[in-house]
Length: 185
Image (cartoon, rainbow, N blue to C red; front, top):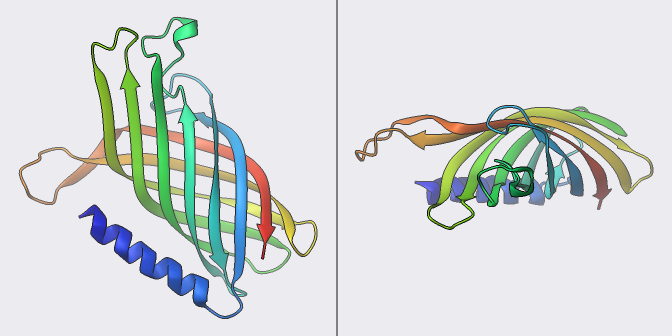
């Protein structure tokens, strides 16, 4: 099932890349993950590669990681090695011009990892995830801009693995607020 979604995303992504007049956007970002399944604000970072046309539509592939999402052992938390990693494909709807306000929605992989200090148990989960949000990219020159972004992430799981297609909301959700630099090619 996941392969089908990845194939559809790849086709849409390549269509966006090959469309005439599309700008290629390479972004790096850093910020915080907060709320939801995390007990306090956590550092997060990542990057994206996207294509956005002269019109309003674009596509983006994004990677982000949030180390110590479920706690920090140096502060007495239970889990020593834990993180959330996301790899998402997103559709963008953006205003034209040197300052682009955009909305985004996407889906992809949400990987969570939990390990206790004594390695008695380990949870390593690959789930389908969704995200929705928006932001702004302001170009300082023809090729360099600053980006600010707010998104909500949620994992989806098969609550009853009986072979039927029945997806339910999972246990991992959070907000992510990031800023970064974008290069336009």
